Amino acid sequence: MIFCIGETVLDIIFQGDQPLAAIPGGSMLNTAVSLGRAGIPVNFISDFGNDHAGDIIQNFLLQNGVSTEYISRYSNGKTAVALAFLDSQKNAAYSFYKIFPEERLTEVLPSAESGDIVLFGSFYALTGPVRSKLIDFVAGAKSNGAFIIYDPNFRSAHLSELDTLKPWILENIRMADLVRGSDEDFRNIFGVTDSHQAFQCVKNAGCPLLIYTKNSEGVEVVSDDYTQNSVVPSIPVISTIGAGDAFNAGIICGLTTLTGFSTLTGSSTLTGSDLDQLVEYGILFSSNVCQSMDNYISHDFAATHLNKSP
Image (cartoon, rainbow, N blue to C red):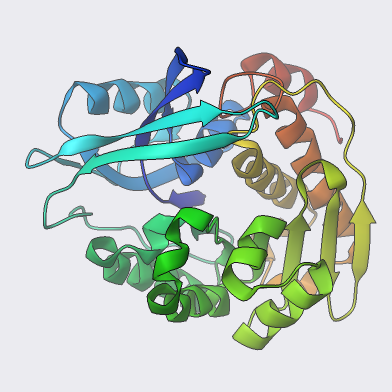
């Protein structure tokens, strides 16, 4: 089973001053929907309002094969809304509108076991009202032998809070078997500008494996034993929203195809060939997402590509 735990928002996407689409979003939600569309059993763990926007999101998740068993719905607050403004390069700047209750993530969380994958990250993993419950879940999963992936997804809007949040980021990295982060993440968090510097930061924090994405400039895998740089294809880009989230879904999809996946214990058992395959899936997924206004792989892509190796 796959578990994705993270924030939920309703994304309203603008090109110039005109709204183009309103779709469910949030980094881990985006990944979960791509996995659901790929036919991979996935649970999404999150919380959002008991309101009309929340109903839209709940129905959307169920329609896309994502279990909502561990979703907390609250009435003393509203489902978060994000306005995403695309620039000329199709990258998004965000404005968030949030009204949360004091108590959050109230559902009893599951127990992830050996053979399961847990993905967590983004600002949700640094949010005080949910962090203790999130960390208890991830730590329990780690102790039980689940494979843990952390995506910092730390944007410049939160730089003013970095001194306070950095110890939590380091704790998150320490629990992970694999960190997948962008060059922007590591520039913001650690002030480093290349994959090997970023890996030293990740390794020092306690994680042995980094997948470092550089938008159109490629993807690098770095560990003590393996380094590889992969080129990404040139494609017509409609929106980069959800590209990193789709990459994470590709990594997870790739993991589930590996021989011996059900007994995978940490990243030390992954070979260079395995890691190359994970990156190929990641690039395949993210390239598809960049060519639409959706934050997730298309149904046509899932039907066409995912019975084959990339």
